[in-house]
Amino acid sequence: MKRLKGNVTVITGGGKGIGFGLAQAFAREGSDLVLTGRTESRLVAAKERLEKEYGVNVLPIVADGADEAAIKNVVAKTIERFGKITTLVNNAQVSKSGLPLVEHTREDFDLAINSGLYAAFFYMRECFPYLKESKGSVINFASGAGLFGKLGQSSYAAAKEGIRGMSRVAAAEWGPDGVRVNVVCPLAMTESLQQWKENYPDLFAKTIQGIPLGRFADPMEDIGRVCVFLASDDASYVTGETITLQGGSGLRP
Image 1 (tube, one colour):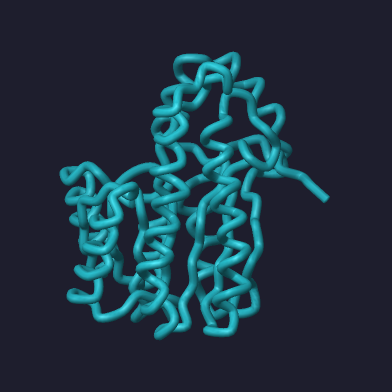
Image 2 (cartoon, helix red, strand yellow):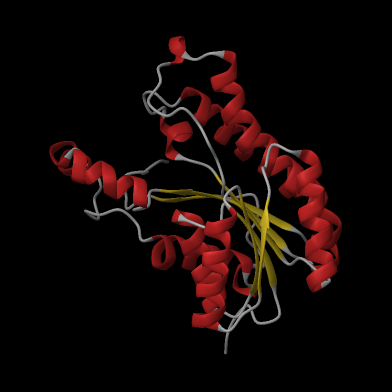
């Protein structure tokens, strides 16, 4: 039996990379989907593939996470189409990776905070009434960049650690309403990472040596299945947690 049959899952940045892998994992378990992103053609292609392969209903909506009005529109269209929201996955994020802190401009920093922290805040606030009705869950994405202080990731890390802090508070505030909030910190193989591997094979090989399991995660099988667990009744007593999915490279006390 499919664990998420009858669910409606909103996934930001669901048209590519980790987001699309998440969409595949949720669709495989029977959840209908709302995919948001900034590129319409990519979202439409994702919708067609997911509906064909998994037989679920997919609603693609073009939206910039930094645009508060756009997020209100996403939620309104979701309720109009499906009548409920059971899971929110805040995956989308844009930043100036690789830029040292002292070289950041205000605009660079705002890019990460607006697309990450503010976007997660807007989606969480607007989805909450419907998550309360469904006794649903939120899965927010953070990063080892914040947990472990990765070089060249100051604005990205700031946004992600802000999301972690907000998630813990939401878990405490929303627990009495039956809404769970958890955080995932992934280390996944994506299109951009594959390109980096091809351009810098020696550096890639050195990076792999620092991962005990010897590989990057698959977005669908490794990241997606854990998120499906967090969204399911199997995780009904899990909230306020940060789960590192980094093949052992994120070891911490």
